[in-house]
Image (tube, rainbow, N blue to C red; front, side):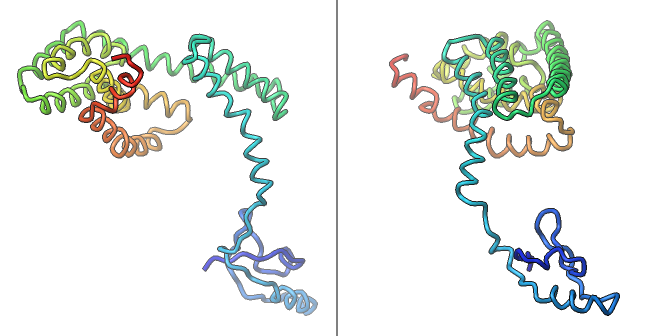
Length: 284
């Protein structure tokens, strides 16, 4: 059983073998072996220290939890500014990013008061490095996508899918697989502009609504954009998070297997998930 010592004068005594570690847990328990006769008194005091099970560890006070929670509110305002500003129609994504940077600087200066010119300079350099890496990833992804489109590979694969099956369920499964493969090889813009219109006629022929098909494309593209060999979204994510490839691939694969794939299948075979809200708003 793991043990922790309660607060006491003898917890940090030089003769006490049961000292706290930096995380508040005990290091290896050892018997007291006094080096000098004068240490017998100290050792006896140390042996009287009360041990408390780790399960009885006192949690921070409720007021302290509230204080920490309130302190994080300014930080969580940044996603509200970005997403709320874009979808609220107040500004474009680029302007939203500029407003978020300005808000972050102001929060660091006047709320947390830990922003200095040196930290601002280091943050600017790090942001420039990350942006440059992302631009290079997208550039090569776009180039490969344009080459494949110029060679009519997506068009040929679309015709192949249309010729293999005519059953609606089979068509939707093949379209899902095709979109995942296309998303792993081509950038999402090329898939949306070139491949999706080609597949739309096929999906309408098996009575799939265009809005439903758009949801299928979106959920399938998420998996494709995080799948090798290109995986532009995955590469951008681990570059922003400053993680290695080995650290990023494992969690990404688990996320796709247990979250993204089930969501894609539910979206594909339950049209109400994508058509329910538009119908409720009267848009369909």
